[in-house]
Image (cartoon, rainbow, N blue to C red; front, side):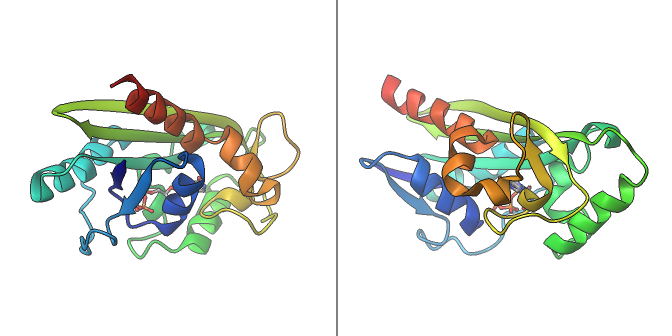
Length: 191
Ligand code: ITT
């Protein structure tokens, strides 16, 4: 079964390739020749996830799913949240984003945070919204080389290492995206 994942983020694509079992053939936006960036003008993860999936559904007439995700820091009232990719500017500079998190959290003792991922799905004339969340905390140094984005500064609860240190195998068991993907597979299996 072919599934279109409405993303240009190759890190997300790599994770989904590992998370989806064999019968599913994952196609990204690049794979279907959809090269322009889809504008993310929503104010919530839910709104942006819908925007991305709707774009593909209505431009190409294809079933698909999207993922809008972000890091939500308690002491920053949920920021960077929906603006995670562009926290330090629209050029999506990951190092600058991490520096901005550290600056905003300077002197803050409680660095509790979570990653949240919202999937919006178009499937056989119906739409679905799915969500995964993983809680943890921010650390003030980059640790590890795996993953992407904020992974080097995020330690999931119950662990002593960052997502970047834990590596793909463990991240893909417990992450926000892994939890949402489980629900996606259940949805596919239910129809
Ligand atoms: P698409 O819109 O094409 O899917 P994007 O990178 O712009 O790609 P988002 O708008 O959903 O995706 O932004 C997600 C950002 O949140 C991402 O760029 C990272 O900065 C952060 N993020 C999301 N999931 C993450 C993860 O598993 N590990 C680390 N950072 C993550």
